[in-house]
Image (tube, rainbow, N blue to C red; front, side, top):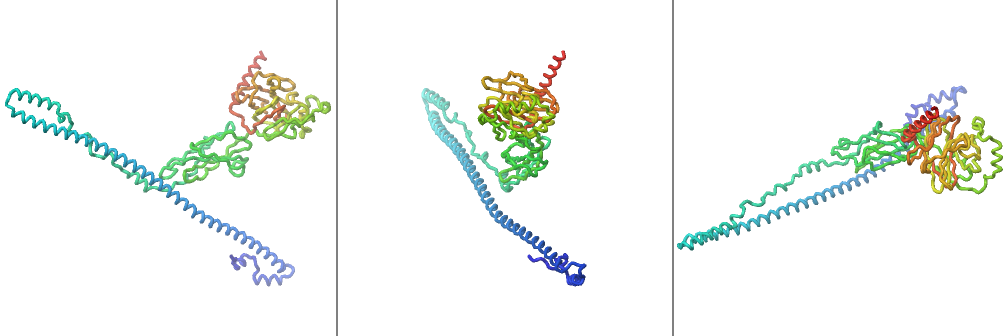
Length: 529
């Protein structure tokens, strides 16, 4: 495709004859012809590059058209085959139904025919009986002897009383009419004339007011498509498809891959068991019938902020192994358990270090050692309400879960042994125990060892609650005042534990918080009295 040379001249890319003369005669004050040529060559290169790109674009476009043409032929053939299959099924259905109707009519005809033949036979017998009786009666009238006449007359009366003609009804038991089997397919015929292809369902509209986010589940609702939305024949969509993905933007752009839920028959769905490790979840829905799926609805972004953290492997005791959201106790021998190291460490710090002195220096703390089989979370809490859960796994002997001042825990310090940590401690070594620990004080709890523990922390109010999630019971509540950022903290001896993060504060916490405030108020009143 050659560019129009005149258009290049008009665009000022090449000099005209008068411009060349001016350039030759203008001396040093003007650019040299060589410079102009270089400039024009660069411009031509840009034009060539543009044309090459355009050529490539056109080539792709033509390839796309060829592919579409080929695809159109294949799709048309496919639709024709499907149409023939549907018509064949329709013909087969009509033939099957026709055979059934034929059978019903024949059976009714045979039933009526048998009944009428029976009546004909009985009537013929009755008629023959009447003829015989009439002949006998006429003969009786000719008897002259009185005794014989009376005997014959009496006999005639008895035969008349028992005669079939007087017991036989003269009304046909069945009618010859078959009008009740008349068929009228005018409505079906009209429907057949209106046959058309299934319409593609329109995009549903998400009902934002009916959508909700709670307990790490998203409830999505949309306005169902009515008959008028699905085509003239009122063909409803077979099902709906919902897609969702996580993102940190309030739009459908970017984020994780779309995940899909299919075969939804209602105009709503609840997506549960989610981990809210992003700020938003974007959802969209589309309808699908037998033919095709329609367009997706306008996406709706639902805010799903929750407390999400991982384990800080740099703090993990040498005997602890972190695998995603699981911590396993894997002893590495006696390394790190040397009491001389622990003694040396403890000499350089007080039992409860001052947070103001240690917070900055301990930001890049060493691993825990000795009998402090501890690992910290990698996300600090300095405001707001947060919630996470812990599940002890098989073969565990002892574990603790709580919060701590990151920089104030010694390498050999166990959770709850100083004012820098608060925890719930469980043990099934030798005997089962459950206790709340803080500042080297322990309070035993009379409760079975829970299999799922919820940890609720309201940093601003200083509330730290431990909950038996399965029984929805408050195990223990700490009331304090946090004076520096805290981190989740975990201790494990034997076995493994799993932590679930990315959780919103569940609804059941509201009733437990109310219970806790009531108990705290009663305790305060009793102490005041």
